[in-house]
Amino acid sequence: MTNHLTPFENKYLPLMSAIAFTAQQEKEIVAKNKELKADLERAMDEYDIKSIDNQLLKITRVAVSSSTSVDLKELKEKEPDLYGDLIADYPKVTNKKAYVKFTVK
Image (cartoon, rainbow, N blue to C red; front, top):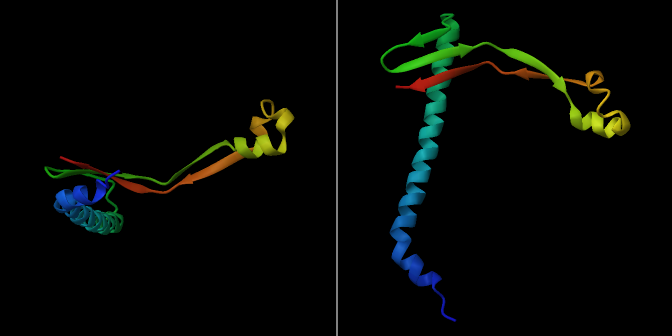
């Protein structure tokens, strides 16, 4: 049986190299985009701006919130026989971080 991997790699090495290069660029762009959004979020906080809608972006500040749900895993582990009857006795509070929503136009 012949090894098809070496001829494949030789033929497609430029393509694999291009993918590796663009993947690295993508990582850098994502990191830069995250940094820019954080800077804008801080500025919006500083100026107490809740939303912006212009020709470039629509930005909506979503306030911090929390929700309460049932921790079904804990309930099932601790009360397997009462799993269906005691859901209200095992609340699970989830705090949701504030965030900024960006829509690129």
